[in-house]
Length: 389
Image 1 (tube, rainbow, N blue to C red):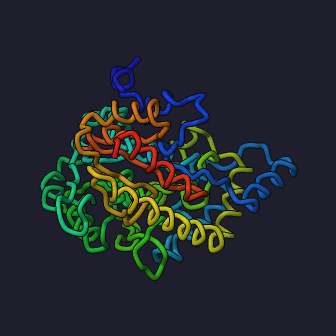
Image 2 (cartoon, rainbow, N blue to C red):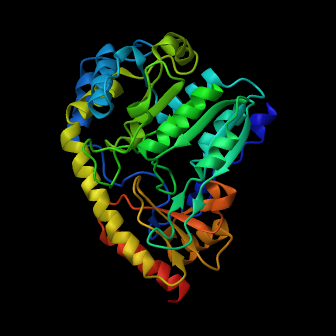
């Protein structure tokens, strides 16, 4: 076994969740998914595909009609995106891994903005990359107390001509931090000067709660040219309630699309046709599915965050994007131990901040994507009871 694989750290989120397996009394808010099922119209499209017998291999890059639909969807949000820049992948995580496999050589330097979903740090290490982390900083005071912010100069100083790849996830899991369009322009201009590729994980772009004309967070696609050294990873999971379907896509310069298709062949060959038919249905009904979901998630956020802010010792801010409340619990620096205790002693399942970066120790992530907002209130009541406040 390669040492890069053998030395991978197991998921601390799973470690906490395993402590609650088989317990019906636990309220689980640890994973990044809604407890609402996939819309009927999407499921029916997959069923119809299976009934037609669409159970064979398809193009490595995806069904042409789905690649075109994704291109039109992205173009409506960000300006022209051609279908020859699109690859359909077996989930957003596959898109991210493919990008890293395509771009990172052993010993290449990779800069990652953290805290972040642990896969984004692990993937370059699997390929033998040397990862440098640039941490966000929690805001200590003012109306944004508990939010996280980027020290732009620190990031620019970290990205040099020796940096092969910069990995940025915004809206961010777990903090909810987002980039502005001006910040994206600054980062892109700097990476053009250094010759650095950008891998932008934008799977939460539609789960955005600030006013915007297009109904999404700022994207690097808004400011980049088609042949910029930019790969944007997306997923049907979050915006279309399709986590278990394992369907994603990536946007890249057309000059590397053919090679990416070869790489897909040696990873998964292709994404199943019936899953892609479900993706087509999701895009056809995006104006029905996503705005309703986002409005509900905003209600969930606005239900949970004030309740947490009222708990003594909690430091939290309403996230601008994503589906998480990321909060600090004073006096509980060992967040992994705290999360395990909450499962066992309070029946409350949260993710430990240390799963996302060392600087997030003492923080906990709460996924607020719940069909029934009363579950959020019950969860806070359990936290209060455990704290004795």
